Structure formats: C-alpha cells, structure tokens
Image (cartoon, rainbow, N blue to C red; front, top):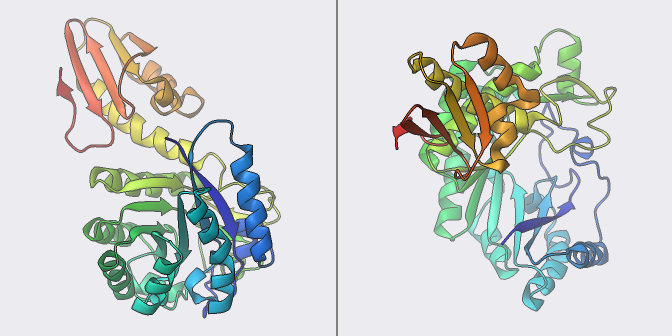
Length: 351
C-alpha cells in the first residue's frame, strides 16, 4: 500500500547552531511554529483528500525537532499521537541533529508513538563539519545511530554533498562511513547557496566555489548508487521544490534544480546501460526492455541516454516498455538476453 507523508514544518528554533548553509524558512517554504490545532487540521485535510486507501505518516521536518523546547514538542506530538491511536494515521517521524539524541529524548518520542528519526548528518568528515559550523562531529552521528538502533527506531541519514572543504576523497569517505553505519534510509541534498546565509557571503567573496548542477548530479549519483548497493533505501535526492527555491533571487548558486532526482537516476541508469552496450559485439540489433515506471530513468532525462546511444554506438537499438521488474533492464541481442540490475553491484547476468 502506498505511504503518503503529512509534512509539518518546524522553523529554526531550539537549534544551538547556525550552519553556514542554513536559511531554514527558504528550504521549507514555511514560517512560524504551527499550533496543535493546525496540526490537527493538516492531518484531517490530508487524510480526507485521499481517493484511494494508503498509509499516512506525520513527519516533523524543517528544524531540529528534539532540540526545541519540550512543551512545544509535546504540543505538536499530541495531536499526531491522537490520530495514530484513532487509526487515522499509521506512523510519526521527525528529523533532528545527531547531538540532540539521548535516552530521555527517545523515551519521550516513543511515548508519543514516533518510530522513525532522521539525522541531519550532512558529512562524516570532521573538517567539513567544522567549516559548515554544524556543531557536531562524525562521532556524534555514530553514537546517535547506535542509540536509535538500541531503542528500535528506524534510522534515516540526511547528507549534503558540496559543503565547504569537501573534495572527492572526502565524499568517498563520507559515503563509506554511511555504508558501514547502515541506516534504513537516506536523503541526499546537494548544496544550494541561499540568500541570507553565511555561505552566500563566502560565495560572493569568492571564498566558496559552489557546485554546478552537473557536479551535484555526479556526487549525488555516486552516493545513491553506493547506498542502494548496500541495501540503504535512498528516498530523496535534491531539495523539494518550493516557490522560494524556484526564485533565482533566493537561490544564488549551487546544485539546485527541481529535476535533480531525475537527473541523478538518468546518470546512474545511463552509465551502467551504455557501459554494458559498449561491451556487446556488433551484429544483430539490440532490444532494450524496461518497466513503464522506469521509462525516464532508462531513456534518460529528455531522452539523453537514447540520443547518446544513437551517436556513440554502432548497434541498431530498439527501446521498449515490457514486463520487467522496476530497477532492472533487459538487454536482448539475437537469442541472448541479459538482466541488468541497476541497483546492485552484481553486474549483468545472462538469462
């Protein structure tokens, strides 16, 4: 059954640090702390609008939830807990900082029925974390992840490639460290330079070189591929589009585009498919079969993979939707067929 999120956005309150990239209201597109009654109304509005049965989860996003005053936390959690007990929703989750996780905090969250906590990890390189003024270390991430596991929570990690001081080696080390920690899920948000942030000042002064969209796609695609190969569910790549983020006076530079997720999957699928096609001998034409849901990933954003294959390969190619599992590509040449599992490191197998 489909799971849908009821997002409750919390502003930047309670957080003890101001990171160089942070302008939280622009990221969320919301200002002000919602009241418990507003939470109730949002839950009622979302659940009443569904035309088909689904699982509903309330998610407290946008701030360091466990760092805000306890009375505000409990005021927000209470209507969600009421809806959970009534069977109106099926789960509650929040996002917070790695250094704002303690046994007492987790016991409070459990008391309100919360089962999933996402940590704003950003990087596992302490030098990068220091330059970003995160106020926590990679060791805090390890400790928080272990404690969440002990209490039986689903664990999420949020990563931000492109922070000051990060190079490719740093990105690889961060990716390796996350793979060792094995969170249940991950989100990847390549850095966007927002007006009103210290990062924007550094960018204007020429002290910080922002990622291009292409560079953001390359880094995010590398991380996502590694995570999926390790069984870590990557549930989002790139910031959710909002009116503020789509305003080019607010996003000054960096790897922001509403199409980030599609571009990342285009790169992942395209690199693997084209590499395999280049290994096939010349001869009979090749048919590339894929699930309907994978059409844009296999063919590429704006058909870029189809176009690249057309001018760079000697083969006569046919592209076709078929009964193929999602995440797989079937490549047929003559009487031989291969299965390419894009999210696995096993490589193509003959079928």
